Image (cartoon, rainbow, N blue to C red):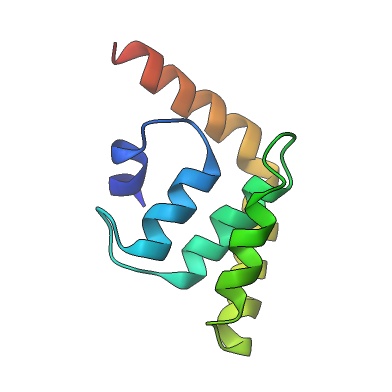
Length: 94
């Protein structure tokens, strides 16, 4: 996951979902892509990411979906601190 964070241009989960869904810069991983899309869909102004999540769900097994939903739930409480750290990293890198 560190590679995806390092390559992300914007501090948004949807961009990470795109990377994992398409295998751009990271190994293709529908479970992680779904997780990032799911987290992005919950954020204001990013509800359109629910369509990405739902389209991806059609390509996944029930087991993969369950794992992606579990990861989303586990990550959610850490989201604010993680995004703040990512923002600091990106702003500091300028």
